[in-house]
Length: 555
RNA sequence: GCCCCUGUGGCUCAGUGGAUAGAGCAACUGCCUUCUAAGCAGUGGGUCGGGGGUUCGAUUCCCUCCAGGGGCGCCA
Image 1 (cartoon, chains in turn brown, red):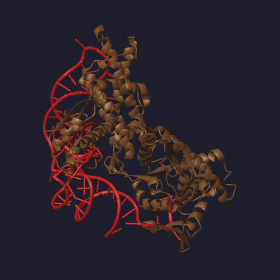
Image 2 (cartoon, helix red, strand yellow; image 1 turned 120 degrees about the horizontal axis):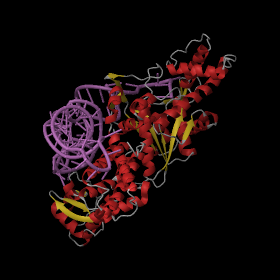
Image 3 (spheres, rainbow, N blue to C red; image 1 turned 180 degrees about the vertical axis):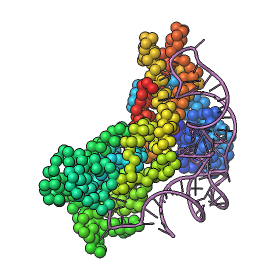
Image 4 (cartoon, rainbow, N blue to C red; image 1 turned 90 degrees about the vertical axis):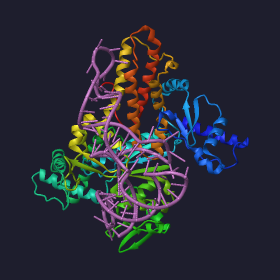
C-alpha cells in the first residue's frame, strides 16, 4: 500500500537526519499518514513534525524541511512540499498514476486485496435467527453486516467461513412444535387449542395446512409427544427452507448451518460441563447449575442447567464456542448480534477465559436495532405475537440492492430509522443506483467500442494525463486502504461512501472526456481511455461485490 | 438505580486528534444533434446536544449534565 510506503520513507528520512546530526536523537514514533481533505495538499500528508516539535525542541516547519531534504527517492512520488504549521504534503507522480491502470487490469478482480489476515481462520457467525418462521426485517441488518464483513475479511486475506447457528433445541423450538401441532390439527378439523404464548403468525396456519396436506393424519394417530417430535422435524424443514430462500434473495449464502441440537447429541455439552467443573467455574444454587462468570469479571452468573434439568440457553453457547475454537480450530470468531443481546457480552468473555481461550479471539459486533416505521408510525416486530414484517416483503417492495445499500451505509452502532413506506416510494432515489449506473455506463461504452471494432487490451496508458483521468485513478488506488479500514475496524459501512465517490469520479470524467472518439486521430487516446474505464469497471464491480450487491451491465 | 450505544445542515446519515466539517434526499437555477440525463454544474442551509477538562491543536479523547434507543429472568 502506497500510504505505508510513504510512512516508511518519512521514517527513513528522520533516521537519516538524526544520523547526520540534523535532528537530535529521539525515539522515532509511528508516522501518521493522512489523506488531506483539500486536493491542493496533495495525495498524502503527515503532521508528524507537529508531534516531533517537542521531542526535537525545534520548530515544526524547520523539522519538515529537514525531513523533506533527507527523503529517499521513490518512483511514485511527484512533488513533496512543506506547508503552514508543519505539514509535509506528498503528491503522486502522474506518470506512475497512469501506469497503475495496467497494474489494476493485471490483477483484475483480486485488485484491492491485501494480506492483513495472513490466511488466519476466521468465522463470521451471523443472522442465526430462531428457525421458527420467516426472517423478519430486523434480521436484514444482521445479514447485510455479517455478509459484507465476511467479504471484506476475505479480501483482507483471511480464510473466512460464514455460519448460521440454527437454534433447533430448547424452549422456543418446543413452543414452535406445539404451535405447529395445534395448527396442523386445526387444519384437519380437530379442535386443538393453541399453546399459551404460542406463535400467532398467519404463516403458522399455513405451515399447519401444509403439514396436513403432506402428511395427512399420521401425527394425530400417534401419542402427542411422538407427534411433537416428528412435527419439529417437519416444521424445521419448512422454516429453514424459507429462511434459506429469504437470504438467497439478498445474495447471502452460508458455508455451514450449525445445529444447536448436535451439541447435546454428540456429547460436546457434557464435555464442556466437565471442563468447567474441573476449572471450578460451576456452582449449584437453588437447585440449578450456574457458571460463575462473576469470578471472571462479569456482572452476574449464568444458569447452565435449570432446576428443571433442562439446559439454559447459555449452556449451548459455551458448548458452541468450545466447538468453534477447540474442536474446529478457528483463530478468530466474530458473532454479529443485535443490541438487545448486549448484556450477554461480558459473560461470553468470561466463558472464553473459563475455556482457557484468549477473549480477544472472540469479537462481537453489536449493531443497534433499526426502528421500523410505516408512514411515520413505529412498527413493533414480534414473531410471537404474529406482528411481523417479513424481510421478503421488504425485499420485494424496495429491492434487495437498495435495502442492502441502505442498511450498509450506516455504522453498526448508529441507530437508524427505516420507513417502509418511504423506502418504497424513494427506492429509485437510492444511492446504490448511482453506483450501479456508473458501472452500466462503462459497459455501454465498451459495447459501443466493441461494435466499432476497437480492440481491448491495447492502448498506452501514459496518454492518460487529463486531471479527471488522474483523479479517477487516484480514487481507484484508495480501495486497499478502504478494505484495510473496514477489516480492522470490523466496519463494512466504509465501503458505501467509497463506492459513491468512485462512481462520482467516473460520472464527472464521463462528462468531460469522450472515450470512443470518431476521429481517427484520437485512436490511441480512445484505446488508453478504454483501459482506464475497464479498470474503473473492475474497481466498481469489486466494491459492489464486497457489499454483496449485484453489478448490472445495463440499466 | 446500574450498564451499553447514539446526539453533526429541513430529513436520513458519513467523517477526522490537526490545515476552509461532507454526502444523499428535500428546495431552487441551469445543461441532452455524438459513448445511457438513474447523469452533470450551481445556489441556499450547520453554536458538530449543553458545560467543563486534557492538548501546540478537540466536532474527534476524558468528566459531567440533558435527550433518544437498548439491556439489567432458572427467555433466547
